Each structure stands twice: as C-alpha cells, then as structure tokens.
Length: 151
Image (cartoon, rainbow, N blue to C red):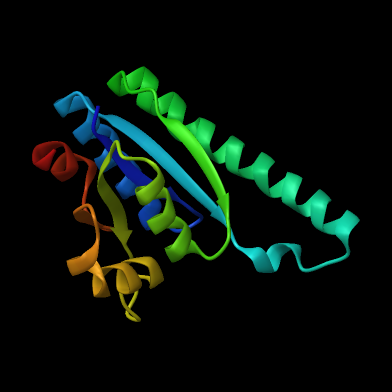
C-alpha cells in the first residue's frame, strides 16, 4: 500500500498537510504515515534531565498525533501510523523515506509568512530532483473546501 508521509510539527501549515494526506489516502486506498522529528538540541542537558525532556517530547507528540489520528479514523476511515525519530529534520525525513519502501509521496505544508514557505519546504525542494519520491506542497491558506476538491 502506498503511504503519504506527512511531517507533524507545531507549524500552522501542518494542519493542511495532514488534511491533504488523509484525504488523498482515503480517496486512493493509501495510508498515512505521520513523522515527528525531535531535534537533538532539546536534549543537550545532563543525562537525567535529557531523558525526562525526551519522554515529555514523546508524550506531546503522541497527544498531538492522536488529535489528527482520531479525525482521520472517524471522518475518512484512514488509520495513520506514527513514527518518531530524533535528529535534524531534513536528514531524518530522508532517512524515513529510505527506510520505508511503502512511502510513495512526501506531503509538506507551505507557510504563508513573508519570509518564505518554511524551512522544510525550502530545504527539501532544493533537492527535489534527487529525492526517491515526489513532494506535494500544500498551501497553508488553502480552504477545507478547496482541499476536498483537489484530493
């Protein structure tokens, strides 16, 4: 089964990327894989403090994921899977794509700020010619109705 890989973070554009991935998966019989990346700088403390912070980060990710997962299951019949990796976001996204041969499309949300679409879109679009999967970039200001129409 082809999976849509979408990145879970605290950005506003993440919501539209999640919606798009779930709607496309529902309409095409695919799956959704949600990737959360914990940056290493969050744990540059003493070992005991770093472990506590790592566990708290994982708990926040699970809670955030469950909100999206419940919506995907209840509204679209899609049961997403969660993957948590630790490291720098772009290398971890690329590693996940390499590690899971079922990932067929990377879905990213584009920010609407004046300073550009966001760091992930900027960095990954630069290397899009050599990626093993296509990237779908979802505009952050696309309405729910428009998302439904294009998926």
